[in-house]
Amino acid sequence: MIDRSLFNVEDFLVDNTFQLYCAGTDKLCISYWENYIKAHPEQEAVIAEAKRLYVILSGNKKPLNKQVDLLKNNIEPQQEASIIPIRKNYLWLKIAAAILVIVGIAVIYKNNPKEAIPNASLITHFSTKGGEKKKITLPDGSVVLLNAKSVLTVDKHFNDKNREVNLVGEAFFDVTHNKNKPFKVHTEDFDINVLGTSFNVKIYPGEATSETVLIKGLIVMEGKGTKGSSITLRPSQKVTFYKKIEELPDKIKSQKATVVHPQIAINQYTKVNDSTIMEMAWTENRLEILDQSFAEVKGDLERWFNVEIVFKDHEVEKYHFTATFRQENIEQALIALQKAEHFKYEIKGNQITISK
Image (tube, rainbow, N blue to C red; front, side, top):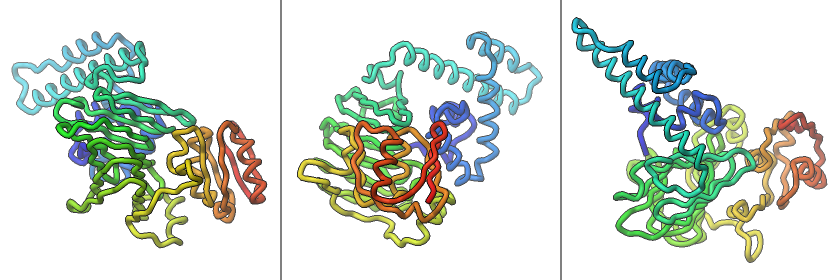
């Protein structure tokens, strides 16, 4: 995974997720970068400059080739120019060229919105909205099912010598075996090394936990910042990472402060019945809730129904539910939950306010 702590202005500008954050078109990327900026105040000036340049380069409505030519003419170094301005001008040219390539990629993808990737060097970024799932076939034949509000980025050299992807959100991977080309999934909390196997990864920004469930095969997980320590998972095992309190939003900190968890826990996945694995139910178009609190399932409900939930009373967050949802809308789901615990709700657009 790229170490963004070493990024300069140019690096930020050519990062797909950073562009979506600057454009304000992807809530997941916005959330990720807002949290990143808070966690890396030392990069505030560089990020601010990158955002400023993004606005300049994307705000002009003239044809892009004319923008690049104009930019090049305006920054053409004079004979009397010093070494420092020349370097800055060269950086501008690289940035302009990068933006030209990026827009070209966007046009190609818009005109050919296929789920399979014909060429990983052309199309590297996939995202889903709330209530949406997407099936992606990678060049090596591996299949990825991307859950709601998730982002999958494929390394531009994917399937050359190795196979590397980055994930924010949740995805189920069915990886084609190839011992000569290791498959690796990078996330914010851990990396997963794979040969050929099926597993589920859930890692949403701002949530108290992240987890991986192994269905078949063998994977090795490496925690970030753990000095090389790793965990080997076997089929039916589930590893849960409990995030540090200082890494969480304030509304999550208060919930977590009252509960003491180990940093990492390894358990078996949860079986609802003989044929249903709770953590995998979403891949079969079902949302399974098994003796979970309102606070614990809030994120799942928001992504499943594409809504935003606001609790007015902390006591309501502690209510526990067991339920299965398939084709229900959000109001039908809330009415079903009311049969287990009494609460009130108000729906305004896509915002749900819940109170006692």
